[in-house]
Length: 253
Image (cartoon, rainbow, N blue to C red; front, side, top):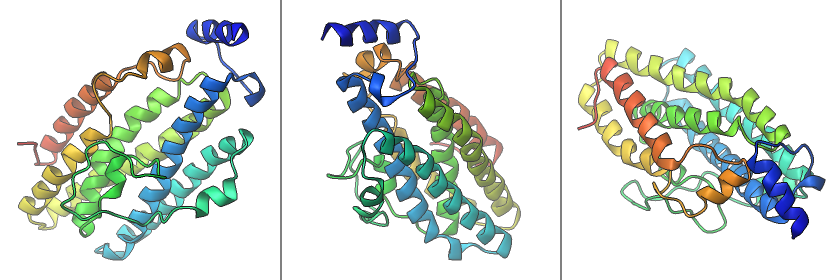
């Protein structure tokens, strides 16, 4: 216990770890939880977006969608390999859950996770066509960017490096979505339909940040696994994404 407390003090002062052997039990548990949430969300997101590929109105859109599916799966693989360093059975992990599983469109589970699945709650909802997929990809993409910027400062160095490689890939996915919405608006898509998708996905993406006051935040902060609180991240997302939507001719009402 005294050794673990010394490591906590080291981490609280900005220290970093570089191998599983140096990680105390509580730190390992929190790190594995964080990685599982990311991997599950990426695999579920890729599986859901794979179904949207054939919704694409043109070949370029379908190529872009297929690329997003490939890259999200690759992002999951980068983090899953690090989970393997901590003893995770990576082969069984990928195959143990139906990543395409979705709730009914009108379900409302807030920020809850489904038993045996660490995906963010937003990835339990189904997409309703191409326009809906593009809107969801923009809203969640901007949220993912903020969360990844936070993860890039993690105290576990190999994982922080992986997230630094993943960040520009996920940023490009969100940028593609913004371009997609602009193109939809210019080519005669019904703004009311796009607005309805914004209204549907906004609260579900918002919930992915978790409760404003998290009981685990201070512990995670001491471990160097979190720096900004949920409320601060949520506020940044709301402000920046609302402004981007307004430029695109959409809004939150």
